[in-house]
Amino acid sequence: MLRKSILVLTIVAILGNPVLMARAETSLPQTEQLAKQGNAQAQFDFALRYFNGKEVEKDPSRAAEWMSKAAQQGFVEAQVYLGYWYQKGIAVPADKKKAVEWFRKAAEKGYVPAQAELGMCYWNGMGVTKDYPQALHWLQLAADWRNNSNTLGAEDFSTMQAQYLLGRMYDLGQGVPQDTEKAATLYRAASLNGQNIGLAYAQFSLGQMYDTGRGVRKNALEAASLYRLAAIQGLADAQYAYAMKYKEPVGIPAESAYAWLATAAAGGLKKAETMRVKLSRQLSKEELTLGEKQAKEYIRDHAQGSGRYVNPQFFENLPPPLTEDELKVNGNK
Image 1 (cartoon, rainbow, N blue to C red):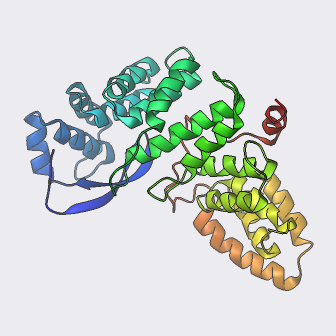
Image 2: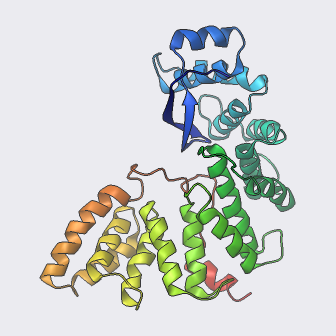
Image 3: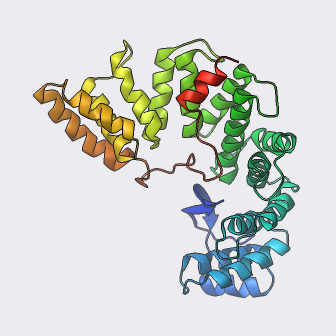
């Protein structure tokens, strides 16, 4: 493993998603020398330099070449990167079957991000035949991982992905008997882990359960709290749900509701814009002025896609929370 006395906190992409983690940095000449000597960590780092254009001219083909060298040596991070690139056609021709092969190599070595990704492949039939039992197997392995350190890494986010998707499977009864209580337990685990981070999809899903009393005792205050956590992370549906709490005893001030509706609308949620206009007609001049001021701040900081927050909920392969129609159908099972 390449090391340097000074560690820097960097944002790297694991499975194409931003993840906070500490990584030792080496100079370009050192990295290149070690990569050519066959050091897998250096080959992986050298690949990322070419992919991101860091101190070298950006070159996806050379990035793929060095990533492949590291992956072929069994370097699990490289195997997951390469799998993701094959899945999405990044730096290499798209080949979902090859993606699964690389995910499987790293998953069988116990690498949590690969286990989560492989489970999602089996869940949605991407590169393999859809197979819920296999999805459950790999997702459960990833969901059971526990972080015993104080370092935030790719495993934390992948574990939350797996917990959320498992929860959704139990929520809908996909490959397992429907069990909303177990779904709630899994959503809760993904909503706030030991590193004080949470998956917004899970926070919103658990909030829905508290709102409707599915799998948990109905609790409007808990629902509002969870909606707020997901809203802060940039989930437009949560911003709308939190704003609508202004009508309830546990609600927020009307001007804050206006600001959250404006933020959800800026994220592309059409019903939020409709409700924002409707609410604006009910506010006093002072309330509307305050609401518009808050809206500018919220849109800057919390609009979906604002880029200010690390938003691990926006993964291309993860299904979104259940819709109102899905809740109505599955709530009666």
